[in-house]
Image (tube, rainbow, N blue to C red; front, top):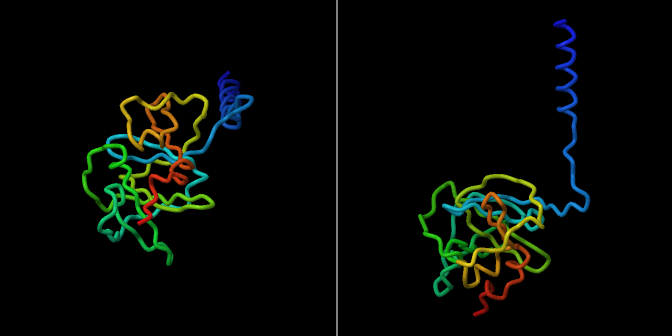
Amino acid sequence: MIVNEQKTLYERARVVAFKKKATPVGDDSVEVVEFILHPEHYAIEGKYLREVLSLNEITTIPGTPDFVMGVINFRGTILSIVNLKVIFGLTEKGLTELNKVIILCNDTMEFGIVADGLVGNKRIVSNTLSDAPLTLNGIGADFVSGITDEGLIVLDANRMLNSTQLIIDQ
């Protein structure tokens, strides 16, 4: 009797372990990287992410808009660093050794954004996103694709990378 129960339990465990997750037909899911801008959680599509770095040294540039934290030397290339907290009107708590620079890029633009921390990768279904909150205004509202059921704010990296509002040409 016990041997039969063990076989049954073993077989159930094996089926569960090797069972593939069902993917809906016409799945419109994307891989995103989740990060923190205290106190909120944000995500950005992984295909626009080049690399994640620890924030070691940043050089401030006088006369730039508030959302530009400065520049860093990334493998011989000078990259602008954007502070999304300023764009989204979040309270700045200062930089620590836990801050990360998320380098975004496409065919024409490359820059970094500062995050308070990384959470990890996840897959979200694009067509389940709710609209951006009405409390968002200014250029920040243009960069939000939507919000997941869990409250994760999904940013549109392509729109950010192609935005003339983030380009300083002076």
